[in-house]
Image (cartoon, rainbow, N blue to C red; front, side):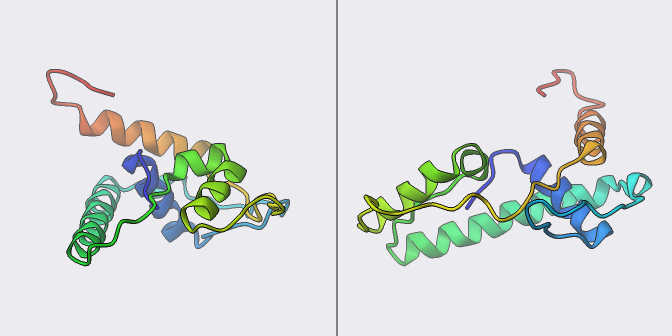
Length: 134
């Protein structure tokens, strides 16, 4: 699985590190975290780099092993859980005719703090840029 938006990936990862909340079952009450002041530019930047290096290592391994994987994109999976599961079944040559796909078991953890961190990182990253891209 990959994620198109590496900044959001890294912010989500950093949020989990500082809050200790890595997942939340669907319908559970969100834990209260006072983490807004724990934004850390260098930590998020490091996690972006780490995720890119990890993906590159996996791609190299798969290429060297002549393995053609099915790539699942997180953003697509979130938008179309059922369609993504059906693509996996098709890739594995498993008939999906009578498959019932359960709704996701976990809630999304992104919140206002995470969005503030994404925007702050974006702004700080491009502060000296002549041509701001995002």
